[in-house]
Amino acid sequence: MKLYVCDVCGYVYDPEEGDPENGVPEGTPWKDVPADWVCPECGVGKDDFSPLEDD
Amino acid sequence: MTTALRNNIDWVGYVDWNVRDFHGYEALRGATYNSYLIRDEKNTLIDTVKGPYATNLLENIAKLVDPAEIVYIVCNHAEPDHSGSLPKIVEACVNAEVVSNEKCRQTLSQYYDASGWKFKVVKDHETMSIGKRTLHFVNTPLIHWPESMFTYVPEEKLLFSMDAFGQHYATSRRFDDQNPKEIALEEAKIYYANIVMLYGKRVAKLLDEGGMLDVEMIAPSHGVIWRSYVKEILEAYHNWATYRATSKVIVLYDTMYHSTETMADAIYEGALHPDVDVKLFNVRKTSLTTLATEFLDCAAVAVGSSTLNMGMMPMIAAALTYIKGLRPEGKAGFSFGSYGWTRGGAEGVDAFLKEMKFQILLEPIISQFRPDTSVLDKCREAGKMISEKALEMSAIPQAEISSEP
Picture 1 (cartoon, rainbow over the protein chains, first blue to last red):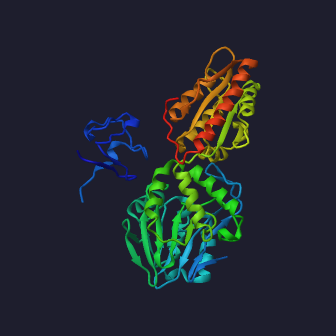
Picture 2 (cartoon, one colour):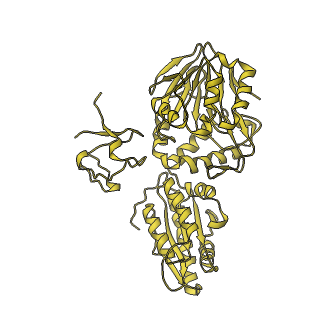
Picture 3 (cartoon, each protein chain N blue to C red):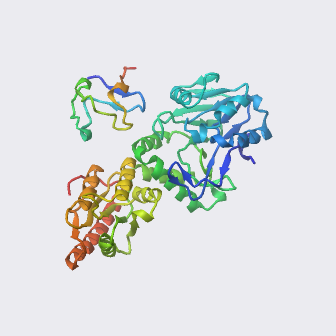
């Protein structure tokens, strides 16, 4: 599953880990993360995330 | 007044003896805005100063070089206390390019009319020779803004760390060892607690990775320059970034007719212990700045409020909101308070502590109007309990506290 990176602060959303502290279980792919979820580090919305390209 | 750090590297900044309110941060010892000039084949200015002091900065620069001979102005951070004078400095340094990362360039454009500025955008870990010296740029997003960056000069083992390791501390002498060590470290702690606390994980990661950097001197954007106590400040940052708890207990409260205050006093009394630092704070007599600093390394807290209009008193809510924003981790505590006919004060605090992911040690201790002997006994026992908890937590290098009692 693809990783997504926050454009503002660099936090990486890893679907395998999810964000359980904020209600997103492990294994949740990006498209299933709720629309009102925000970056746990800097607070911006999903719109400010980009797919993390492999190097 | 300029001060030399190294051969041809000078502090050219401004010492602000008068500031006491730094966007809400109580700066009892004033502040400084540190700017540094490197004279080399390509003269480079590292950051500028707060807007009103542009002239002071230009005067300091002019003592050393003609501003027209500055080739680069490095902007490590777009916040106005450092970039505020940039428009005037760019105007005076007619041949200079502003060197920053892309995010900083964008942010500067959203603060100032930068349309006429010449920018040289640098990437993370990019290096740039300025002659005898090289500048290495290291992005430090969210330490403490998204665009924040460090500039490292390997030939000098000198790190321009921007706000990291900074202190709001006005002094006439620029170096750590020229000032009382305890005060420099205390001010660094106050700064960390109020500005950096919530980014602890990033700081810890940076310190781990930065171990590769050979550093003898750290020149921050505020306060004294570290040269004799580099080890001490790095160790302090490591402890704060890993939320290391000391054996400290805080009793924080607000009160209307002293009932909740009496409960607070009893908790404090119960908590007294020769190996525990117990603090008793009335929220209306204690600044947010002090509270954040004390919460940084406390282990356990008791927070109390009378009930006003079925909820917490507003200043307790304000203090908890401020502290919540700073995200202290690994703390434990409980709430307490009095009420008249409807509950709500202590319960409001309890809900807030839970939101802050504190380990809740017991149900709120409440009293209808005046606390009677049994309530006060309960308070004293609870005080004893949180002191014991603090001793237990501070004995572990990094306490793993679950949210279950």
